Length: 338
Ligand code: NAI
Ligand code: MG
Image (cartoon, rainbow, N blue to C red; front, side, top):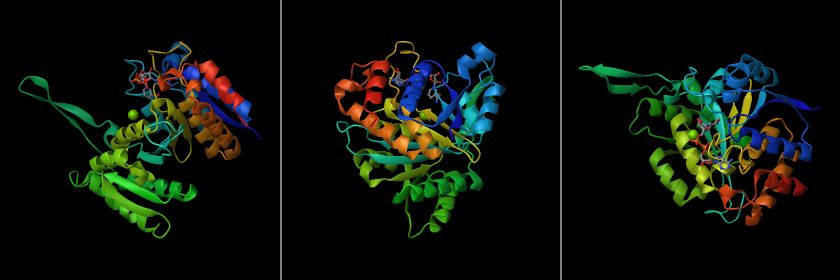
């Protein structure tokens, strides 16, 4: 039976890459029904809210959502709609694979997965200015919050991911040498959880700055990585760079009761409406969605069709140095579906 998912086309290039992705899903025979909803600028335009209740209800009902990039309209009381959705559904694990899709990139055969804690750290929004001697902004403070609960569930997710996907090693990256309390707690909890997987999944910890360098000099020395929110934000973009950039980077946001799949890139206002956006990032996110709901066979065929298409430099979109527009690229992927 077809699974109904919430689809939010999003803003900027969102509708273009969403339409391309849905065409590919359809052609590949994914068993999905779409409950289309709005958010972001489209939400304000159509329903006077950047995050309408009807959209939230749809995600609650379907538990699975495919989301295009959203522009957070200024002055609507949201710091970021994306962060608001992650909070609303407690999507605590941000899963960001870095998988080589071509053979002519900076590195060949990269296959890494970063699991980023998605609800705590500096993203809790506990920050304020401190006024001094007539200067209301003489200083500023942002509080990093790590809880045993939050650290444990994300590290456990990383290990369970490793087990389920035949991975060998989990690397916990941290800064416990300096941030002894917050990062120290994250590391301690990580070590405790790792003990339960001894003999099954190898575990190591590394300092975050050294990890950044080692990811560039020897990415093959890593497998699954887990870290707190901001470190994960930064290193996952670095890892996207190892395999060709934002146009190829998918993401899943996983919670206990819901999961949201989205491209890593934003709404790209500079190229919106021009028909040149690369849909691969969102399509790979849809591939992760299919795997999440057990449609692995269709997922595998879409991933190979993308790989076959991207193998020929002539068959790429502008961001990857090619000359195809979104529609021509999408047709090529559909032709390559085995
Ligand atoms: P961006 O990712 O939208 O664009 C950065 C650069 O990459 C631009 O030059 C853009 O043209 C290019 N680019 C991005 N995706 C592309 C694609 N699929 N194909 C070809 N080229 C692509 O980041 P930017 O400009 O910082 O943010 C624009 C808006 O997007 C902002 O309002 C931001 O808040 C929002 N945003 C939303 C995200 C989400 O919904 N998850 C994530 C990141 C940003
Ligand atoms: Mg980021």
